[in-house]
Length: 136
Image 1: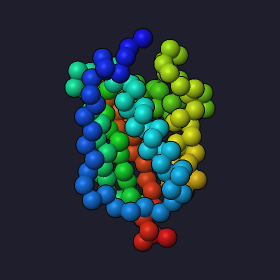
Image 2: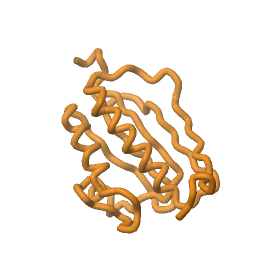
Image 3: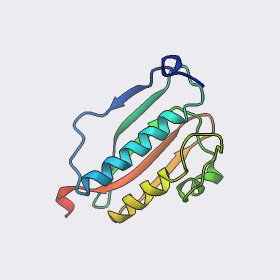
Image 4: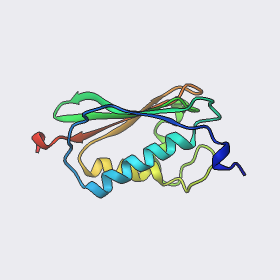
């Protein structure tokens, strides 16, 4: 078992002045917690792990946010699989395989969407849209 003191510090960058969004506060906190937890969990032994959180822009009347890491990455043929209930790419990893399925459901409940862009060994970027208060 690896102790927390042996784990490298994950450098985290949060873009300043992120805009307000419209939605269920508690569910959106779950989205962020799950995405950040996954980014930290699947670093793959990086010596300088980082997570970046920010706004990419707009998609129609929705804001496009991202959570980017420099971890293990995901092969393209697994992009849809990872959002399925109980689907885990690494059976030995912690967790139940419901985190990303829950994230997808919460995002879709807000009439929005989530997707991933990644390359194996090069990290992942999860994008998701959310309504801004002005779009409601």
